[in-house]
Length: 115
Image 1 (cartoon, rainbow, N blue to C red):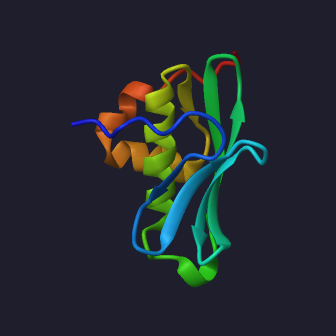
Image 2 (cartoon, one colour; image 1 turned 180 degrees about the vertical axis):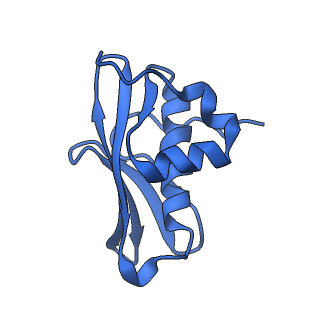
């Protein structure tokens, strides 16, 4: 079963655990993981007309190993899938590896050409 589409406009949020919320921050061109009001991780992207290029994912050292990067990847890719307007280009090594471990997301992949 596919996840429900995120609400339209602005910040898209979904609680991934009792404490961490993942949201799209379009003004900063990144998805952010927030814990107790503090950004503890992010997945940066660049938008094109028909693609979203994930360039970098980072989690605060103090929160490594807690599944935050995985939460970011899953939320971001589910958000792209729900929107249905863009293909994913995974330049970020973490996003690329995450998709390889979750082949059901390979359908979102596009080419590395601009557009």
